[in-house]
Length: 254
Image 1 (cartoon, rainbow, N blue to C red):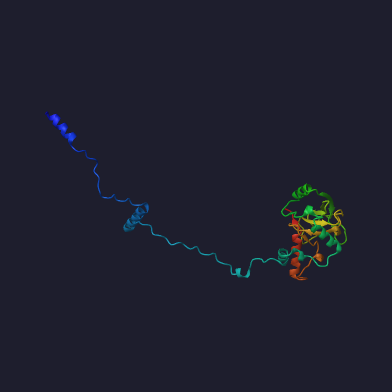
Image 2: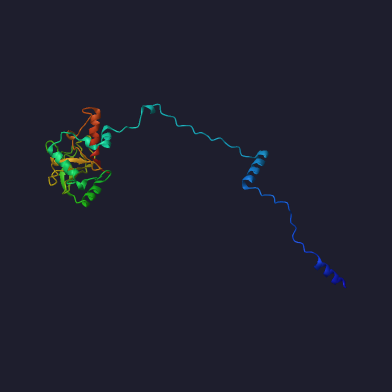
């Protein structure tokens, strides 16, 4: 047997061995949290770890010594009445004319064109456009003294104060005062008011045909003090009550 044959026989007869394996379990790899903790501990040992800072409390703004004397404005008597029962704003001694108009409005027989008509923050032009779309017709007029019926004159120009009377066939009415009322110290600025005239075909130029006014939510409200139930009488609170009533039934123009 040759030497090459013997070497080949020894290689083929030797048992084949696979890769060496170890019975020792593999060492688990540290988690990210553990590595972070180890890094932080090492940094503390070396003195390079960040020192946690206590939160800085911002000083409070100094309070005014007068703050305790001021409180949030409380609702006025008029606002409280309106929020509870708007009907109690009315006097119990109304004329048959006013009672009939209120009854017709509550039944939906008059004034539907102005029910919920909100003119707050609108310009005179925007009001005109809105009323035209709702089928109103305009008649030019002048402000008049509701007692004498005579035209009011602007104290500066000497001219009659213009007013636009917009009327709907169902009795809805809007009085637009684009130049305001310079003779009225309470409301000289341009403004408008929403009301219902009765009967519906009555003239809008006669203040006596105006049955009542409406606020922005469509609530019927007295057009003047004698139709109102002012529980505060002739006092400062009573004056405030009437001022709030007027503010509720008039909208200043933008």
